[in-house]
Image (cartoon, rainbow, N blue to C red):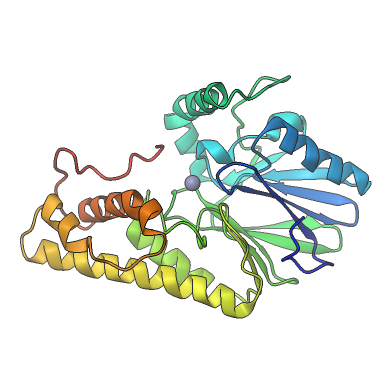
Length: 289
Ligand SMILES: [Zn+2]
């Protein structure tokens, strides 16, 4: 449990030893809602032990999106309904086998010991824009939040002003615009209206004050606005993908060493989305890389 969350919070974090990944559990009145409950089997065991130590029962598993690192864990909770955003049905139909392969490849390379085979989760319950889930005497909300992935959702605990931000608003990653720049910007505008004092990204450290939360929104909104502005200017000037990448190389963003590759892919993806033509070697994000 991270010390950054308020002590009486319904939410407990389970940071993984890999990829700064976060899993989470909301518990209230002996009911537990799990969020992205990965990664390693021993880490899932820890989540399960925590739930049972509180004499709680898992009522739902929420998967924020279908990237391979966010679909691990449900196989350890058989019979517990999996909830995803509606778009995940089409995503899984098209890419499910590929995602499953990514999981098994990661397990092989990381020598993950497994006493139970990985099963690609399928949603038992879906929603379009918003879903309220009962959790003891209160509700938590799932909100569709496309941009990083078309099926991405976030989890909002209104009573505790806590936002589980999925793969957005990280302190270590810039926005990975793997789906749509326009959708990503709209999602951030929508979420910025919420009252949030604790924010948990899918990868990275939580932001645990309103000022920290605001700073993360501001940084990512500014980055995406400048990205769109520069790419549109390059397109208006008739530049190609390679020239547009060069025109965006000087943009300001954090952790440059780590984020340089994702930034380039963002530029290429935005270039295509905003009307440019893909060039060899400049095709942007592969949705499941
Ligand atoms: Zn992702």
